[in-house]
Image 1 (cartoon, helix red, strand yellow):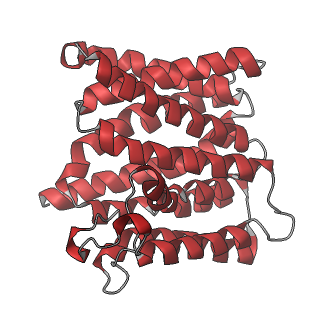
Image 2: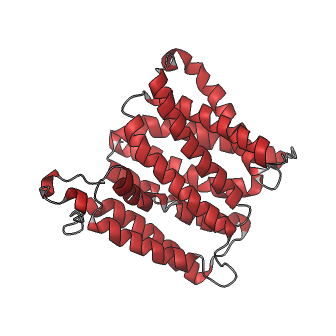
Image 3: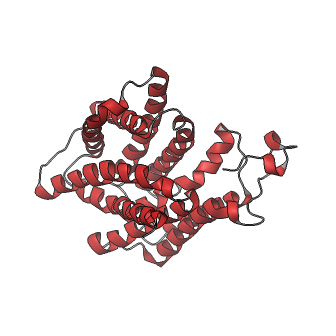
Length: 306
């Protein structure tokens, strides 16, 4: 097995774990309140990474600030996602969360003054149509859970854009550690302010919680950090796009969720829009930057591509 094939197999297994977390979290939320679940999950993960303390410390103060900002975006994303899952289905949550990839080019325009490609715009239109269909089947209208999940997708998109800045200054271990500590601290504050803690230590609930902490936080973080560098970003994003599909299949098999024919079509449009947005850099005509005021007069080859 080649190095790239081994890496892509590892990333696929990571993606399947991520996809399963929507169902696992849905089950765990029967026994554990959402913010408490996020707080304990990231706190335990932070303690685990202290095993590597010699490679983590010291961390310059300026870099700590960047890691805390990333942790804040993660706190918003995971908090909104889990609270949202109390009001929406696991499959809808997965597809809407996947829209973060399409929000990235929009945020790059605002934050980095980086013009999107025509392919990004077409992808956004496809995702918008897909979201309409996904949240409009009979008995599955857009609700507060979908709205929170949409906020989650925007928060994760902000995280991705800012990660491009912070990752240049810190080692992967330092960055992972600071993010997880700060995500846990922000969530503990939110628990104290907004949540009445619910924790019924059933065998199923504790098992789901440990799965989210060990497999979906510690293991996947290590695997992605270790293997993503052995393949291309384009091939990686194609692999990651399987996540909402696997989540929907898992939700159907485990929870009996059925999003209907319009929901399936909407989910397909969302995945297609995400892929088109990410792969458009390699498609003639769609890889051209949209002319905006801040990049007029810049030669095509000199324009930044998201």
